[in-house]
Length: 465
Image 1 (cartoon, rainbow, N blue to C red):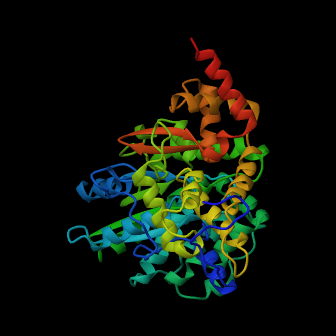
Image 2 (image 1 turned 180 degrees about the horizontal axis):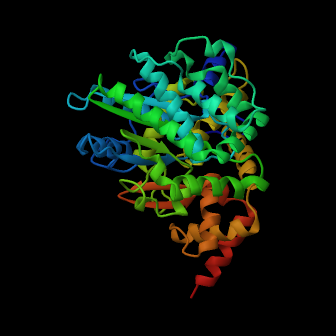
C-alpha cells in the first residue's frame, strides 16, 4: 500500500454504469431469495473451524424443533437478530427446507407483518390475531375454501358495531371473491396507515375484545382446518416483528411495554393450531425469561465473527465477509483483490454486522473517482464518516455500560445496566457473536468514541493492581 494520497496498485477504474450496478448490489435492505447466487453460507465449518456464526445454526434448531414435534402438538418458537443480518433470508431458506423435506412436506406461510401493521406503533395481541386471521383466511381461499364473507369483512363489521364512526368496508373488496391476492387489500392498508382509523379500531377492540378474539380464533381455526386437509403440516413464519421501533425517545417506554405484554404476559395467545415462528425485537431477550413461555429458548442470529474474543481478526469470519463482498462487487477492480489491506480494513470496521458492511461498501463505491482507480485514503474516510454517526448515539450513562461490556464481554448483572445494554444491542452499539458460547463486544466504530474511550480507561484504572 502506498501513501494516503496515492492509489492502490492493482485496482482499476470503473465506469459510471459499473458503479451504478455495484451500488444496487450493495443495498443493505435487499432481501435475498433462498437460493440467490449472492448468498454466502456463513455457518458451515471451514478448514476444521466452526462456521462464522457458530454452531449449530439457529435456523437448524428451528427446523429440528418442528421436525421432531408431534404434528398434533404444534410448536411456538421465537427468532431474532439485528436488522440487516439476514433473518428474512434465513427464514426463506427454512421455508424451502420445510416444504421440500420428504417427511414434513409443509405448507409454509410467510407473513410480512409490516404489510399490515405500522412498525413505528405499539403492538398488541389483537394486532397479531387480526393479521393472522386475515392472512390464513386468504390462504385458505387460495386452496378453494369458500365462505359468505371474508374474515376482513366480518372484522370490519364487528368493529363498526362498537365504533360507528369507522368508515364502511371498502366496496371493491366487499364485492370481490376472497383470494390470496387480497392479502394487501385496501382495508389492511387503511388500518395500517390511517391513524384515525387505527385509533377507532383499537377502541372498538377494547370495548368488544372477547367477541373480537373469538372471531379471530374461529377464523384461524377454520382456515387451518381447510389448509390441513390438503397439506400434512402447516407452518406459519411471522416476520418483521423485530423491526418494531418508536420514532422518538418519548415513545420508547410505550413501545417496549406493548412488546413485553404481547410476548410475555399474553404469550398463550401466540400459540396456534399449527407450528409457528415469530420474530421479535432483540432487546426483549435481555428483559424477560422468554424460554418459560415458549417451546424453546429464543434463538438469535448472531453477527459474523469478524474477530475472536481477544479481538484478533478471525480468519474464518474475515474470509466469509470477503466472500459477501465478492458476491456483490468485482473486488479485483475495486480493491485490487481479496488480499487487499483496504478490503480487510473495511470488513473489520463492520464488526461482522452485514448491514454496516454493505453500507460501508456502497459508500466506497460512491466515493470512487469516475474512470479512475480507488484512492488509498477512500476506505479510511468512509470508515471515519460512519464512525462519527455511531459516536453521536452514545451518552455518558451508555458509555459506562459499554466500558463494562468491553471488559467482561458479558451481559451486565445490574438491572438498570441490563436495560441500557438491551437498548445498545438494539442500536447495534453492542454486537453478539458465537463460537461455542455466546459473547458480546462493542461495535468497533463505537469503541473509538471519546466518551467510550474515557469510560474504558476509567475501568482499566480501577482494575489495575
